[in-house]
Image 1 (cartoon, rainbow, N blue to C red):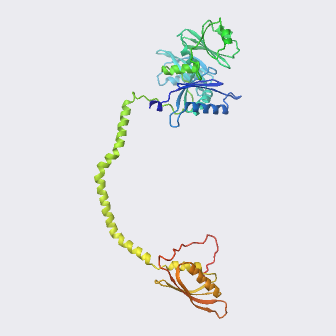
Image 2 (cartoon, rainbow, N blue to C red):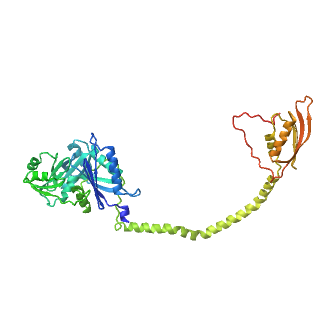
Image 3 (cartoon, helix red, strand yellow):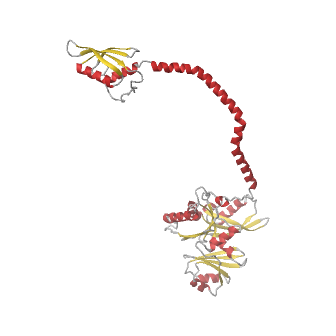
Length: 451
């Protein structure tokens, strides 16, 4: 249950050309490609994000995984500063002013962190590490996109924790493919940082640092060891083998496991959702309250049903009584209205059927409708054939049961035929229901019933 909300942290070594990741279940090494401007290419970033996401295996509902990252000393400035003693809440502001006066860039343009060395009533001596903010932001964007919550420190400071000799003067040599990183430590504090190319003046640099114990790590070849033989007491840092395992990642893992302080470089990037660190022992009282609250929430609906059941029953009985009184008043009126609607003669339906069946040129003289379903009309058309067509359409409508032309007389000018027609519409259940269809807007359709 604890691992479900609090995933174990991962340990990352960030180099210019490679990225190494170590966790309890294994490791991962990824190459990094950089453009002419020194920044990671888009393709390299996308491939690294995809590989890291698959390696971490974080679910979408889980918080971001904590990532403790070590960066190389390239571009990092390490200085010991003496700051006047100040209140705890104001110390950061006082140190910020000191950094602004000592460093070439403003604190807003740097990612920086500090660690206290010594202090008294008047002053405090601190070790400050700073690097350009863009360096940290570039790495932070990659790691955040992969679902990690990154914390940054200087890799050399972490590697010093692997030195078996406490105190004294030692030199750490980290051999990479592009550079040799030498850091001189005195009394556990970095004094000098040197970066050399793989074929640089290594012997002279070690000689300038004096006869000291030299601890080497990274890709130290036999040629490098031969160049250092006779110049110093050369020893190799004890680091377990395996993918993703290096002096930096192993040292970071040891520091976190021992809960030792780490100098963290503060970044200005938007922080990802941090990993949830939860202790059941420390939060036992809170968990008890949550359990009690959940129990109350589960039992409350049942308790509410038991307590309010008599009141709800009374309300239901009152509602039923009110419904019966309402029905006693409304039902007779409703039955009357429904009967009236059912028995009402379909005058409008009959007129609608006549208007739909009327041929062009129909001149309507009179029409008579009664409640017994009898219809009689007098009209004129151009010829007898149109009269018969009109009668046929009325029959096809299915609305009338009998239709007869009782009288048909030509006009004196032989231009029209006057006729009288009678019909009987069908009962309510036998005749079709008429659906009025309105003509389309904007069309100019003549009304056949208009004289």
